[in-house]
Length: 69
Image: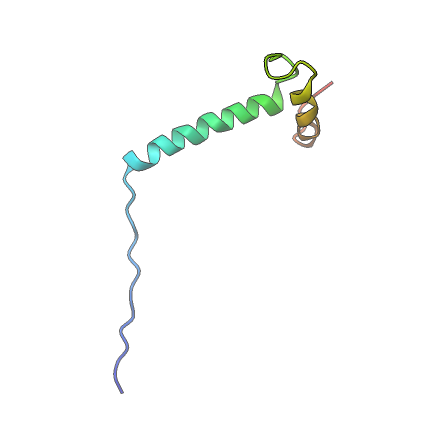
């Protein structure tokens, strides 16, 4: 019988220089989403004059236990 060789997986190293821009982008995007879900109550009238942002995020605020009214 012949012996089968078993491939041993080796960890892949990812340099910090490649991760850092994506980590910063993800952090900024998370902060923007957190702002809109938590505190945006129609203060930015540039986006919508009829409260569309507020109504769109209304249920999400209650789901995350942020006060809305």
